[in-house]
Amino acid sequence: MFSNSKVEVLESKLDMYEDLSREMLSKLESAVEKISEGNNRIAQILTKHDERIEQSMKTDTLIIKMIDEVKQDSEKDHKIIHERIDRVQVEIKALAKFRWQVGGVLIVAALLIGAGSRILPFVVSPQATPIQKSVI
Image (cartoon, rainbow, N blue to C red; front, side, top):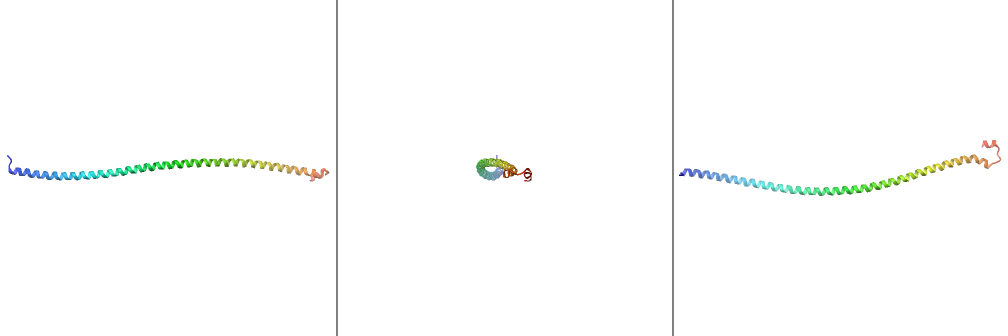
């Protein structure tokens, strides 16, 4: 049924297919190894990326906490400054009031001195004549 030549051809073809399948198998194994290595590298990168994200989140929370602390401190400073400004304004109002009082006292004193200089000649020399009074 089969001749010897046909068997030999079939065996050679079978050998070729075996060689090809071995090459394909080795190439497939190599490709699978490379894919595995790629997956491992990606897994490492993802792990590092997750760690960086966690560190970033921790840093963000710390920064937010620091910003809140600075905000509270600045609000306290703001209140203190406003209290000081209010005290200074009260002192300025008191000083202005005192200035007006001193001005009033000086005006009254000037008026009294002016009136006193007109009355003083009459008190010192009551017997002066009206002509002498107008001269003085």
